Length: 600
Image 1 (cartoon, one colour):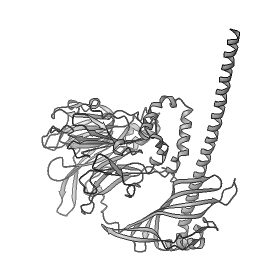
Image 2 (cartoon, rainbow, N blue to C red):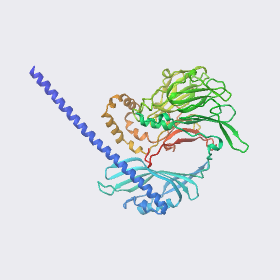
Image 3 (cartoon, rainbow, N blue to C red):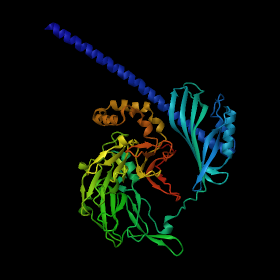
């Protein structure tokens, strides 16, 4: 018995020592990886300062019409064999807008003096500069304290010698070398490559900027004051506090003229289109009060559809953490609140919706997107958040009421949804549903013709991870199949999403309780992406996506469509700007900038 006890004690001792050694080893490995990540982050910050100084030198060089300031950023050993000159080649103009591609011409070697002369030629061709910035696109390779290879986004807005407004958007690959010491870095460009470059120029008169007040529209957007609080989820509250608002156009009184509805955080407004006056100017009248629509706050969207087939469009107002509203169009210029009667007065985190007749019974049904609760929740996984309220599908009971059929339809995804679009992407005669989720993926629900839907985003090739804000269907190439455009965030911090940072994120999570609590979500993510999940950091910051419909239920991302870099995008829409019969894209974008401009 004693021998058995001693043997068991010995085994336990060995196991304990092995576990201790494993823990010490793991801790050491993680510490080394942590240190590597810290050095990567520090290198990125140094590169940001380098680019900021470069842009200031470029502006100074423009004022003095010389290139020595910019040349100081290049090494004396700068040399690029066969580089050639970078010159603009004009492409056919479209709608009065000229497009030029920056391309290498010739194969002569380039020295520092050649590069300085090229900078001077560029600056002397510009009449004025309104804005210039350089940002890291990607850090491609790092040899700490010695060398860095990165792609750089260069943007310059100004006027050219012909007084045309223009924007240059170039991408370079810069090879930097540290010509200082290990403790005092002095980065210099030793080699550069042109990745791509485009200039867009025009007279700026394609659209006329009209002061809304001169045509009767005195609306000014106001935030929801209820979100002016410090919440446990400050980031989410910050986003929702500024994201309220939307605009819809509709002929609500059937007079043949489009009217305008503004959804607002404090007071939503309806403006009637009174047509063109004898002086030739269009006029609108604020009819919010007389239409019975006064007092609508916390509104995120206003969507019109004829829900009872009486020939007049009714109004659905989505509201955030407040009862949604359905107003029946009485046909006489007024509306009546029938929210409770129609079963749509639920309190949710509604952000977007679309009407669709998913069962083809002749009555439009309704799909409503839900976001997270900014007062109580944060996205659990910043790139795959699944802890919002479920989206909801309502069946129209022949114009008398809407019935919640979310569960049986299989459409209740819990992503942080911001936009939805409904259309028949596979041409089977039944409308499908696309959803853009903030902090995550896209959803594509295929209509099964029996009241249920199947989520097909992975199969269709449109998972499109990112900060999803908008989504729209349209046939951009006239092949008879609806293509898909999604809007996301094109961030200047995309470089930070390299694999080294994703791995650091995982190590940080592994040290907390969330490694266990969110294990199921990480497994779902792995099932969607497999080992490619480590590249997620790059994807979520690369911007908008245009997907071509292959006609077989799948899509192909058009990587070279030049439609992804639209900044911090929100709503998107297709329209024919110049009546060319070819669809163009408008993408609303923007966010609140810090001072100095260091935001995403």
